[in-house]
Length: 156
Image (cartoon, one colour):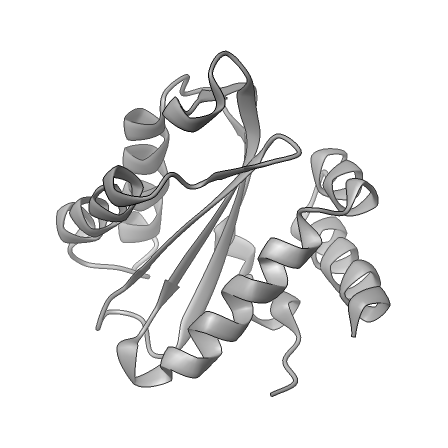
């Protein structure tokens, strides 16, 4: 399966400067914005699904980044949200180290293969320092999309 991850990052899905200092507040802010933009309806249900996964298996994976994901019928196939957090978020799995980038994947269970493939690709990308640097320095959704496209081409 060949996909372009940037295709699933809508302009409404880039949060360049979240100021929330903990995971709960950051997720609530992201999901509230997604609901205000009409992309999701039941932000509480999605929050609960994300936290259930986080409590089961930590999302922070290194390079100052984390991937959270869940399935929801509210999304037709897949949405990738990219959030840059000012000052970072403390995740239980990384001790005192803070996570500055959060990648949130929300997908429909009917598009399971797409979701899993996208998750694996994002996991590969965030292990690349060049990708992290590009996303951290991004000031627009176009910059983020370009970072995805450029670095994804290197691992294809």
